[in-house]
Image 1 (cartoon, helix red, strand yellow):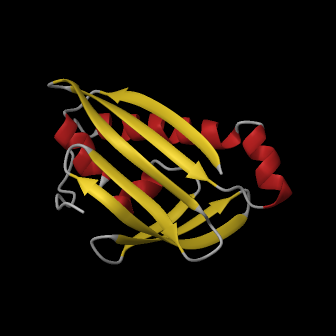
Image 2: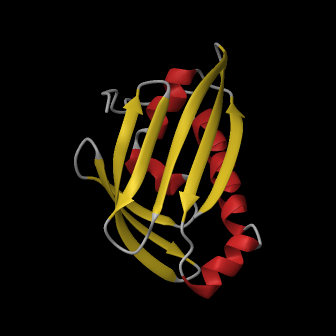
Length: 150
């Protein structure tokens, strides 16, 4: 397993950042390579990704969710193996630090080489930067994500 840790500060309150992050079906708007996400249950999402022409479909299960604090997940079944957690940290009333930790298992020679060259780390950093631009452009109006606990 390979590990990636990245963080970013966004100019919105914690609740807005958390609410927007839990709107998983919006991820294609800021996550490069994510074609579609379907929220199947409160704790199960179905992902369709296309990276460098390779399409993959997989399910991810939310293993822990605490409003305004954290969302953790792991993939279930299929060929994609990853797990992660995103945490939300209060800086001030209008600033939130988002920290993302991802454990993933590169598949095949191409993904292994790409991982060693830092492609995954740059992808995660780019996705967080696009999330920052996305939520700040919406005036921090994090829409109503699911606020239940897992």
